[in-house]
Image (cartoon, one colour):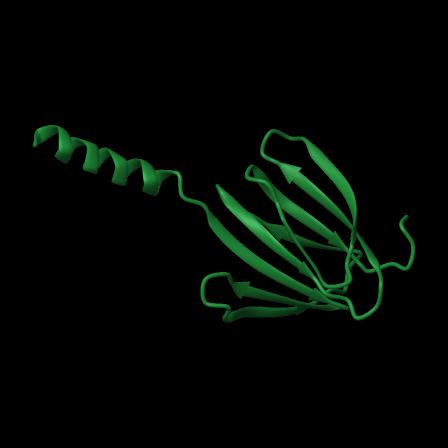
Length: 117
């Protein structure tokens, strides 16, 4: 009985400490919407007025990036990691959804472009 109680307590402790939080950001043209991933409720609205829109992520957060430009376009995405490394990708932004890996601390999303540059 003691082992069962100990196992239950430890499993609850480890499940809670390694859980991840997911945030969702929706891009369509110059409009940027941030949503609560669990309830799909809009949290905020913004316009992309600069070359890159910056999204900061907390510890163990995953970003659900919904790129829904009306026409076939490409967006440059720069992902910064907690160890100082960064990766650059050119992603298709015609109704596509992407997820960032765990360990990302900042994501810069570029404006939609016609060509992969």
